[in-house]
Amino acid sequence: MLTEKRNWGWHILLILIILAIMLPVVFMISNSFKTLQESYHSILQLIPSNPTLGNYLTLNKQINLLRMVSNTFLMAMIVTLGKVGTGLLAAYAFQNFHFKGKQLIYFIFVATIFVPFTTVMIPNYLVIAKMNLLNNVIGVALPQMCDATGIMLFIKAMEKIPSSLTESAKVDGIPNRRIFMNIIIPLLKPSIISVGAIFFINSWNEYVWPTLVLKDKSSFTLPLALQNYISSEGGTNFPLAMALAVIMIVPPLLIYMVFQKYILNSISSSGLK
Image (cartoon, rainbow, N blue to C red; front, top):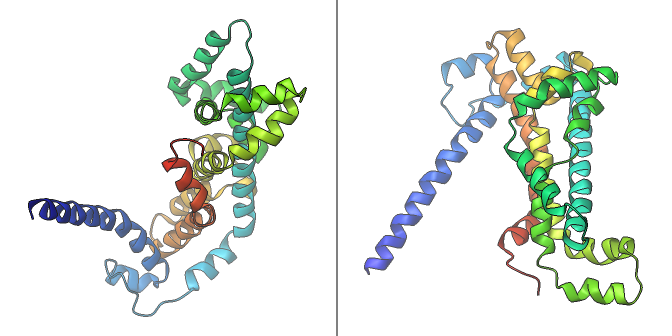
C-alpha cells in the first residue's frame, strides 16, 4: 500500500511538470488565433472566444513567409547533413583505423565542445565575409558543418556493432567504402535519425550566428523574422508574434512525429540484437 501511494505521488508530480511545460505552448497557440482586442482583454483565456486565422493571413501579406521558411529549412538541412556526414566519417575513422596521433586528434575534437561560441564568432564572421557569403544561408551553415558532439555519439553507437562483422568483411576483401555504406550505415540508422533530428532542431532555432551573417530581410530565417517583427511592432501586436512563433515550432514537431520510433529506439537501446 505504501509503495502504491509513493507511485501515485510520482505520477502526480510528473503530470504537474508536464502541465507546466505544455502551458506556454498552449498559451502561444491560443493567442495566435485571437484578435488583438481579445488578446488584450483575455490574454490568459486558453480557448479563444472567436477563433480566427487573420493573424496568419496578415503575416503572409506583411512578410515573405514562404521565403523565410525555405531559408530556415535550407540552412537547417545543410547543417544537419554536414554534421551527420562528417560525424559518421570521423567516427568510422577513429573506430576502425589506427594512425599516429589518433588519441591527440580525438582529444582536440572533444575539447572544441568546451570552447565558447563567442570566442570563434568573430573569426568565423571574418572568414565568411572574405568568402562573400554574407546575407547567404550558405554562410550561416558553412562554419557549423562539423560537430564534435556528433562524432562522439556516433563513436558510441559504432562501439555496439560487433567487431566480427567488419573484420570478416575485411578478410573477404571488401573495401572500407562498402563496409561503411553497406554495413555501418544500415546498422546505425536509428542513431543517425535521432542525432540528425537533434541537429536539425538546434539549427532551425539558431538565432545569434544568423543575426551576424544575415542583414538583408530577404535572407532572414524564421527566428530573425520573429525578433525583427517584434522589434518593428514594438511588441504591441502580440497575436501576430504568437502566430509566427507557432509557425516556427511546426516543422520540428512534425520531424519528431515522423521519426518518433527511431528517436525513442535510439535513446532506449542498450545494444544490438
